[in-house]
Every structure is written in structure tokens, then in C-alpha cells.
Length: 154
Image (cartoon, rainbow, N blue to C red; front, side, top):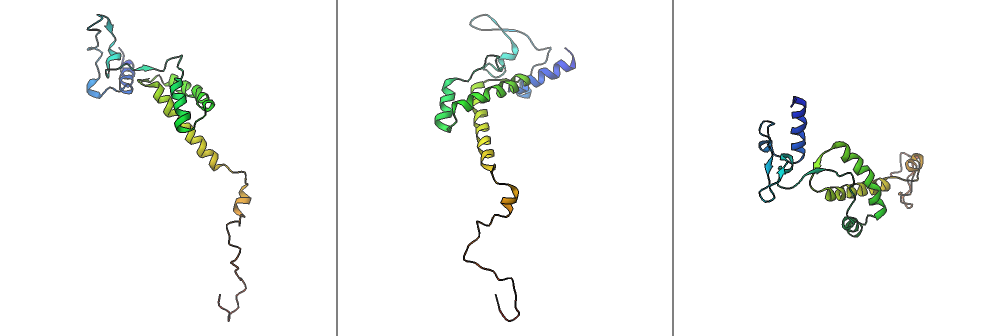
């Protein structure tokens, strides 16, 4: 195993949630048998007790999560489905292994929804000139006299 391969393996293990003292050396890496089924368990699958894996090619959001987003966050189903392509492109490219892809997708959709709502609120149909010359905030009852005569106080 080259140094570059060792670095990649280290990064994959850290991204999968392994603590520094849990990382394996290439020399220590062996296949263990499953105690019940007597099958070989790849060492990378045993990092934290549960299986971590890269985003599956055929990942689809669970309908329960889509319903949850609509019911509890008011996020339309169409918006949730639109986020799937960007989510898959990003996580397939990084190759990071995770345990809970459904939850990760749910959090991504919530973040994108809040971001889109914030951006929509900041957009305005008024031009900069209209915003700068707006006097709608001024009180109509106040009048200022800019002609100052020396004997009249404000």
C-alpha cells in the first residue's frame, strides 16, 4: 500500500466516524469472521458498530421523510424532490461514507428551504433609486423650516 493509499484510507475512516485510536494500520488489517454466520466482515464496515456506506446510486428519499418535511416544516413535496439531484451529485462526488442518508437528506432540504425563503424575502421589486428616495416612512405632521432667521428659534 502506497503512502497515498494510506492517506486516502485514513481520510475515509475519519469521515466514517472512526476516532484516531480506532484507526487500523494496513499491517493490522485482517478479515474477521462474523460470530453467528461465519462470514467474512470487511474491516471498514466495523468502525462504529453500524454500517457506514457511500450514498447508494439508487438513493431515493423515504416517503415518511417527505411527509414529515411537509407536515412539520411546510416544505412542498415538489421542492423536496427538486433537491434530490443536487444532493446526489454532491455526495456521490465526495464518496464520503455515512450511516443515515435519509436524515442527511432531510437536513439538506430544511437548510435549502430556509435559504430560499430568506433570499426571497430579501429580493424586492423596487430599484435602488426608489429605495434611496423613499419617504414613506416620514411623518406627514413634521415640517422643517430650512430658512434660518437669526431671531426665530426652531
